Each structure stands twice: as C-alpha cells, then as structure tokens.
Length: 426
Image (cartoon, rainbow, N blue to C red; front, side):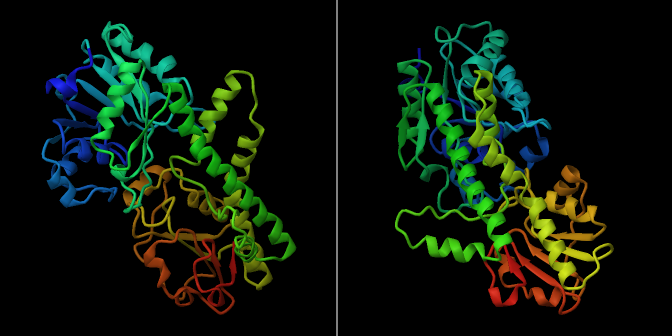
C-alpha cells in the first residue's frame, strides 16, 4: 500500500504554514512535489512572493525549494498522497486543550483521503490524541478504514523560533507510524530531509508523550528557578549571583528565571495534565510549576511598584516603558506572551504603560490583545523601564536616556545589561 517513495507517486501536502509548517514545506519541496496549504490567504499571498513574516525562512531558501507551491484552495490537496498536519494546538480560557484547528484539519484531509494515503501529525498533543481523536474524524470524513485503507504517523515538531543555527533539518526528528510498515515509511520520508537524523519511536503514543514531556520538563525546571527568585528577593540576594555560583558545579542545570510564554512551554504541560486527569491522576509537580510560572508577571509588576515607592515616586499616573512584546528575543511571535500580563497588572495600578518592540507586528498585537505599541519610546519620559525581552536592538540602548529622572527605576528582567546601569535584576 505505502509505495509512494519507490513508485514516484509521492506528493506531499502540508496543512498549516506557520513556524512549523513553512520550514517543513520548504525542505520537502526540495525533494518532492509539495503543496503548502493555509486558510490565511494573506499569508499564502506573501509566501508566493517569498515573504515570511515569521522570519524563519529566508528569500534564498524559497528559491532553493523548486517543487513547493502555496495555496489557500483545499481542492489543490486532492492529488496528495502524504498529508502532514502542522496546525496550532492551543489551550482555551480554562487551560484545557483546544483541538478545534486540529480536528478541522483532520476533516479537511479526510475529505481528500484515498486508499494507500498517509496522514502524519506534527502538532503537539497529549498521548493518544492522534488515534483516539483524529483518526475517527479521518474515517468519518473519508469513509475509509484506519490501517486497512489509510495509515497515520506522528512526528512531533521541535522548531525553536528565532534559532538560526538549529533549523528543521538540523534537529533530530522523532518518527512513528500506526503499523510497522507505516513507521518505516514515515522514518524513510523524514530521513531524506533531516540531516541531524531520526529516532523511530516504538508507537505513535510514545512519540506523542515524548513531545509532551520535553516542554513540561523545561517548564518545571524554570518554575524551580523562578521560585528561587521569589525566595531570594525576600532575602535580599541577587538570584543571578546565586545561580552563577551554583553553576560552577559540573552537573548543575543552568536554567534562568523569567517569563514563560509562547506556544510550547507555557501550553504543552496542560495537555499532559489533561490526559493524566482523564485517567484518574492529578499531576501535582506539573501543575505546581505552571502556577509558579503563570504568576511571574504579577511578581515582576509588584517588584517594580515597590521599588518606585521606595524611591519616592508616585504610582498612579506614573509612566512605565516595557521593552519587548514578543514571548522571546529576536523573534516576532507574540503568542501567549507574558508581557501582556505585566502590562495589565501595571495599568491596574493606574500607571500609563508604553510597550516598544521593533520585532512585533503592531497590528497583530492590537488584534490579539487590544494594546497599541509605540513606534519609538519617548526620551526622558518614564518613571520605570523594564527590559522584558532581550532583543539585540535593546542591548545597546541607553536606557537612562529614557528615564524621567535619576529616581526612575530600570528593571533588567533578563539580567543581560551592565548591572551598574540598572536599578535591579530579576
């Protein structure tokens, strides 16, 4: 059944052209006919011109991918034999998995499935989601039978937005399939584009679980150092000084405190927790870590307010600048950014808060959060300045020129600036 690789019939369809799907489409498009599909026609039109607003794919990379075609027309997927689903899997307002996009993509793919086709999921899910949630949708939409007429695989994405050294081909890829033959096929497929190599997992569920714990582990480790920051702040100790001293031990893990946002680390643990609770186990460590990290913006805002009060500055009506709106440095991604939480906490004190970020799209920030970015920060204007995101552009800024007076507070949340020129660090 799965003979596309050897028969020359292979045509790949990538569903979703964000941070994960676009680089994948570019790489597969170097080897085989590839259709990149997205429901956002504006995004599709830009990609046809070789423009990627996520800045993950260069203009040269578009030119090197000779067999890729971008479309917003679902009918163009009909001739595909392998479908790779890379749509977002966020959480809802109750912090439960939101599979809306994933199941919609499954229905769309199911409408085009033919005997012998393969569907590979890359979207982050909980263990069992592919076969328990997605496969029934594929069967219902196609009228075909799973593992008799069509097959599935799971190969979790490991894209690190903003990382120009570890692109998709340079990151080792976990692969899996619904049958031994499907697993071999999926592994051979990815082996053609992944220079770093592949790791065949024994089952789809194992591959799903591996992805879930990768980010949950980071989340828990960061929550530990964030909790240390809360403790050391009360003790009057500089957290980074402690961590730098502890890091002289060979096996100390060098995690740093800070905001935990984005579409992976701040989301994936809730998927794992959801599945654990569905089988009767309440995950204490995972959810405890999530609570600590989710509360960090409140800690940051309150630490600034206390420092301003100690300096004799008024709070209500004062002016504060947040440098950075994205969830990480040198990246335009604003999904689940915790900077917004700091903004809301400070405005709740009656402060006037500006956010400046040359990487973020002002239109996207306003559409998503209702906040208007400033085009440039005002000189000699602010009673408080917080470096929230360590964009390269911010590292050379003279933050003192932005301050209203010598009493103004400069808060280096990333601990990357000259400590003699800032009021406090995390």
